[in-house]
Image (cartoon, rainbow, N blue to C red; front, side, top):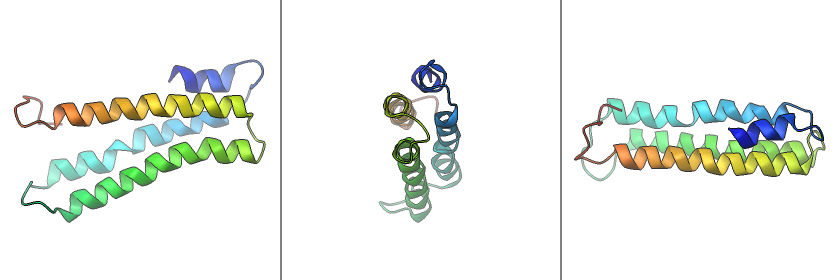
Length: 112
């Protein structure tokens, strides 16, 4: 989040358009969390979970695409775009670590 805030508030950038990626940070894990909560793990194929992962991937790609599109149309500067993309990598790596850690069967935190 620090990189996204820096992309918005540094004196040479001064625009808060990159902050809209925070919406993707909030929305991205919701389909997967709901699918894992309300489906049973039966067999190798689960269409509900696969659809949720597809929607999550669409939101993640959109989070990376938004700053690039804003920089291409010259709404924001490329430096702000790079800071936002670096913030995206950190946030989504953290979300991936969360899902990998708490999805284990031996964990007491299967309620997530």
